[in-house]
Length: 208
Length: 208
DNA sequence: TTTTAAACATACCGTTCGGTCTGTTTCAGA
DNA sequence: TCTGAAACAGACCGAACGGTATGTTTAAAA
Image (tube, chains in turn cyan, green, orange, blue):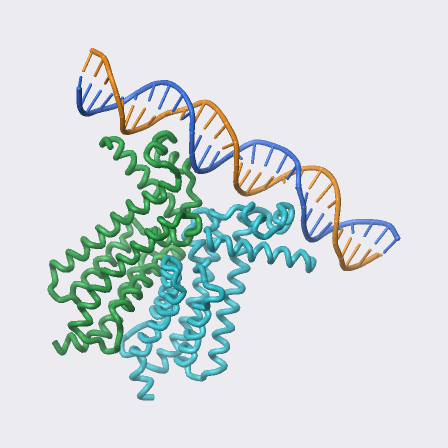
């Protein structure tokens, strides 16, 4: 693909992403995207076979960006701290800064948007959503396992439970954040979760 | 309104609710509803001024049912237990049974569906969503405040924080539940939350 | 039994939808 | 400089859309 073509493609994807995060996928027509992106119908269908194809490509495009960002934050935390608990704390605080950033306020989670319209998509799209969410969870699980192995928690709890909790808190926080128009809510859930972690692990950490 | 008319109205609302929870609001056309409910266009537009009017009426209808169910569970818990902590535990376990009921598996939260398509609705709809979520939160807050007043928590925590956390966990759990096709996930979050509450309040409860 | 309004049925209308088709422009490589 | 394919532009199409207009049925009150 030529550089110019690639640019147009990305421009369409970015515009579609913005519109879909505002109105949902079913609420976003091809014409809406054309108008907002100021590209022609010919250009659109040159890059995407159909509207459904856009959904699939957009999801992959977003997931790639998303996982990259996730891994970058994780790598940064691991580079700065040796202790898995410190790494986790650092990762979460970085995430809190990112998610409540008022200059580019988050309109929610794209996976949630696709999930709540799941019946209109093919199985490859819905399974991609599930796979990406599972990848998120898997990274959390590994780190929580390291923490649990080093610092026995005050109450029996599994890495999977903790992972599922923080992912649920973030997803739910994003829903409330948008419903209430308050960009701080998701970060607050992450903070509260860290307080819970402290309650679980503070004793073993002090003992060590 | 006649009994027959009221029946048709409710049938349309129930059908629309089912379809919208599957495909989203923008993904559900009036014709889709007519076909699924086996009613004519004349019947539909006799009961609802427009498609947007259906959205508004449906939301109010659902919110009324929802809050009633919520209050019923709360009243039952309060009738069976004197202690606010016991009431809360009872309420949450009842909720867990309800939400993971496999005979009528929950496809998610209608407020979340409307929230993630919020740009397509008028302000009266979006503010109704926010108001209903706030009502939920308020009921939780009052109960948590009673608990905190009676049993000083191990760490400083506000009733608002605890309320926001359980609501986020449920909203997020419902997203994951649908994404993964696992009806147990939301109940698991509620359980985990109760474990956190135990960690917070067990000491003061034993002392009392 | 007659009257009347609510409750419904259906043909129809203008618009928007996703998608196609045909043609033009751009630009890297021969 | 020429060539060909990629990149785009925009008119056009049939289907589906939300909504209306007009008529028929139902059922309770007079």
